[in-house]
Image (cartoon, rainbow, N blue to C red):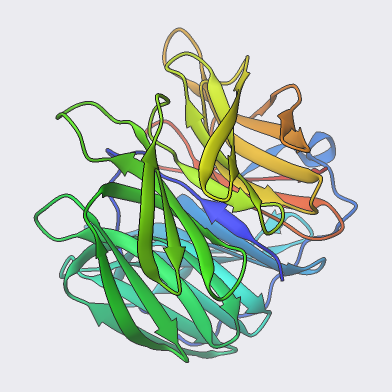
Amino acid sequence: MFRNCRRTGPLAVLTATVLTAGFVPIGITASLALASRGTVPVKGAVGLNGVACTSATNCYAVGDLQQPGTIRGAIVDVTSGRPGTPKLVSGANELNAISCTSATNCYAVGFNAAADGVVVHIAGSSQSAVAVPVVNSFTGVDCVSPTLCYAVGTVHNKPGTLVVTISSGRVTRQASAPSLGTPFGIACVSASSCVAVGTGVGKVGRFRGAVLTLSNGGPGKIRTTATSYFLGIACANTTTCYAGTSSGRDGVVVTLTRGVPGAIHNVPNSSQLGAVACASARSCLAVGAFYNSSGAASGALVKLTSGIPGKANLSGPASFKAVSCNSSGACVAVGTNNDLTQGYLATMTI
């Protein structure tokens, strides 16, 4: 199974989706490297927020596209690192995250036009959506088997997180976690053990990193850190996960051991790191952005070796929001530009 993670900032506008028929499997070649292709625009996409690779030749990217007078959810086929034309997601504003257990079984999450959270089951060319009205928007999802996933989202009209259990396409459990103010990612190491990250509940305008452990979809202990809000998480093995954030100056990678924050690594030449994906227990990729003195963004990609970050590779006028890697080490990162008008995609081999 391939893990993927996406992130957004706490001020981002989030949305949801109902997919139309005609969903086509997409691909990426493991030999492609960032240096050979760079960061490419995804024409027609306003932004890309999530990506999932199910094998060395199959990935899905999700986000949104511009329609007359409005924005609608979108899905993009990517073949050998080349994005196709975004496909309209009917009845939706945006897709925020996606997790797959195979090329024909994925779950995407976000919110709909009524500002209710939506879970979309994608089974081959068939799609079905479940609205969860108490949720304002789902921001993360991770599937641990073809029939079991966990998703996190923000609660309507008050701080806090709702964790939902998805069984065979149905939301079967809802659990409130008010101490996790806003969730920005979830990663599971088994059907019973997950970790969600985001912001802690604190003073207005102060975003502290928060880590919430989950057992069978039920919230457990929460821990806060001195770092800024966590923007994404991926687990390299059953005990060790990595979360992305910012020190206020540099991008930061924090090692979590059984949900407990540990080593903190600043990454110069990056301003913010969020999403993380792992190709193996030793090799992961963190993505985010570097902002220059005028505020313009370049995409930042940072290889992690046993949690230790290397040099930030910068490419393209984009802030990367999500990344997914396959077991061969081929990774796809997706994001958007400064003014949120153009989606971008990059490939990198780690």
